[in-house]
Amino acid sequence: MYLKEETLFSSTQWPIIDADCKKDHVIVLLKGKGENMVQLDGETIFTGPTGFHKIRFTKEHFCLLNHTTLSFYTLIGKFVFECEVGTDVFELFPYRQGVLCSYGDEGVFGEKIGKNRLNYAAPFQQPESYYDIAIQNQLLYESLFARYKPYACLGFSMDTNELFFLDAQLKKERTMDVPFDTGNVIAFNLTYHFGVFLEENKLWLWEFETTGQVSEYPGAFAYTTRAIFSHHEYLFLVVSEHEVQVYKPIVNR
Image (cartoon, rainbow, N blue to C red):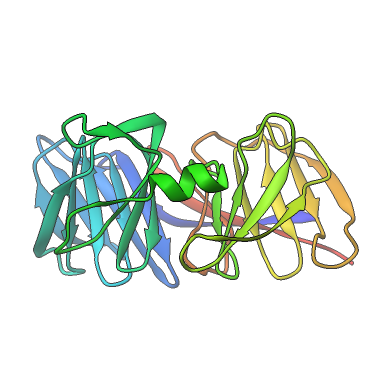
């Protein structure tokens, strides 16, 4: 096995804050002098105030997170809609017309209305709490959420290592026991042939759909590594100050 890697974007002029990719497109949030900028495929489409720290593609737009405010824009940088999604947003996952917001330490929604694990935000509607779904399924919605037939997620139980398969409404369809400890997994992704689970110093390759064989490989993976949520040739994306890189394992048989 070896890792196929590609640099999608590099910048020596402005530091990179965050980035996302979708099929053949890459969108990057940059820190300018007293402003933030967004470039789509190398072309600047948005310039605005500082404070944005996450950027994600949605189905038809892109969105920017600034503390508790989530803003949606067209792919030419025109403002569409904004809403309050609460403090301590840990991650944004493209879902339906908008994004799922997951929270560190459960998070606080709005003006401290109540604790939340998961909210759905989309243009032209108020955020919708998915707290009951998260609690009922006992799922870990952080970086450990992947797109697969259509979704998959790791459980947060300390006693078991379960992989949950979810339907389009995020309802649990079935579970599968993972044959290794997932407690230190940084990110994971599933293909139609195998699952790839990353830890800081190793990679687990699990042929869960076929032989069930598990292979362990040494490696060095940054904690900023995340699974590429939209269907893409590559499986993982890592953003550094000056580069956006993607990669996937190639299995030799």
